[in-house]
Amino acid sequence: MSLFGNGLDAAVQKAFTRPAPKSAGAQMRYLVKQLKGTKPVAQMLRISQRTVERYVKDEIKKPRPGLAARLEHEVKKRWQPQIRAKARKKAATTDGIVIDTRARIGYTAPIGSTDEDRLRHLTVALPPHYAARLFDAQEQGATDRQLQQIAAEALKDVYFQDNGRRAGQLEEVRFADIEHLEFDL
View 1 (cartoon, rainbow, N blue to C red):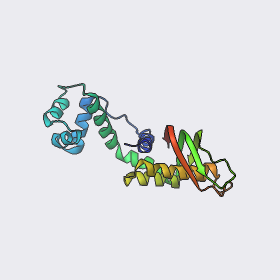
View 2: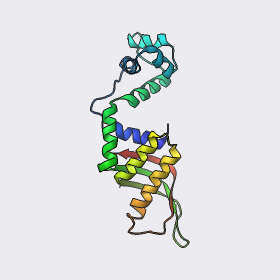
View 3: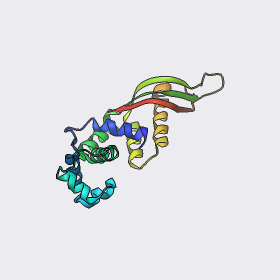
């Protein structure tokens, strides 16, 4: 998946009230229960149905790294959907979202200003309407580039233009060379 998409998912997962299952057997049993059978789980994880059954019975305990990553990803994607939805709704309506990034950030501005990209570490609280746009775009399958453009637009508005109080001629903010990116609700 994408850097921005993973960052949004990680922020929402901090709202979980109970930890997701850790062991491979517990994760497999959870997925079998969610998908109502071993066959759909086997197809989703690209393994045999018999292998799924062996994990469910704890006959196999340690998955290969690739399978372990897919298993964890699929469990976290489905874990506590109501709490995930509530956290997203709260961010999108009242609390907003915080972006913490260390990246080369530049902008397009009129001639005479220093619009050269430079490495910046920014921690900025974005208002709820930007959180809503990010989450809506993510749910509709937006690419990492599209999520990045929404975040850049939010930084332009909130950080560089201070909600319209300065840098009014600023046209576009762009990310490059992202070293660190984290979202928090």
